[in-house]
Length: 135
Image (cartoon, rainbow, N blue to C red; front, side):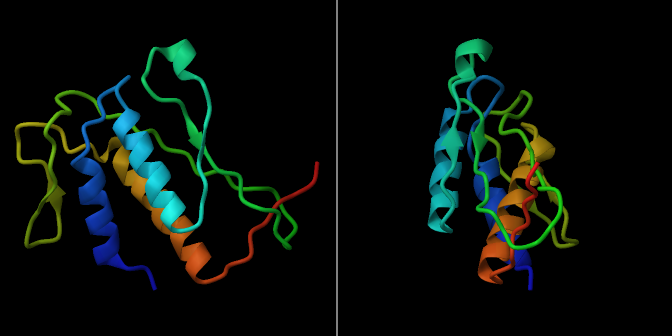
């Protein structure tokens, strides 16, 4: 089962991290820790040298699986548009989540990061077989 509260809590935690474009270091470091907690080691490239950001891209190839087929790539970005400092998720009784109105929420694309994290965590928890093709 997908844990909706866990998803909401993780999303709220990510939203609370300031991560405007080119200032994603804290987000990258947090994601490395969070993924490591579920047994996934994220590797960081050195693209910040070309982009001017304070963090590179994060990636984690899964181990080869036993199923035939093409590999699947999950992708999202860590930065949010301005105003992006001091964000916080506000949960409403109807189930919606918004910002407090003084900043963006950061759902673009922290919702994507949250979905990737939860999908990977679910696959690990259910011991789902990963798939990888040989080219």
